[in-house]
Image (tube, rainbow, N blue to C red; front, top):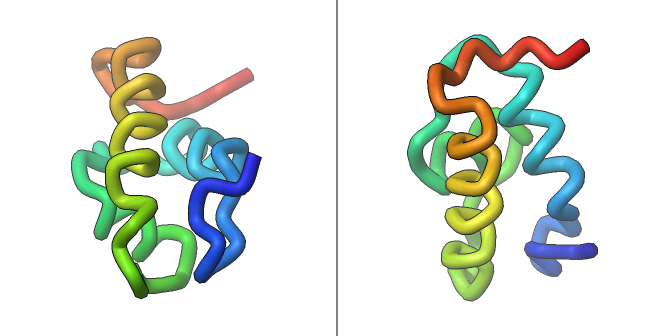
Length: 67
């Protein structure tokens, strides 16, 4: 599902970046930075944060290496 229509970012892209990076991502700005874009209108920030929080709760220590 598309979360950010300005940058055309899907929930899957967010989950992939959270699980593939070794850094702990804790903000929407960090997610956008890892995806190589910036927040534009900001309407998606809550949705991005929700997906980020969901991923973080599944992987609480954030050693983001998915097999």
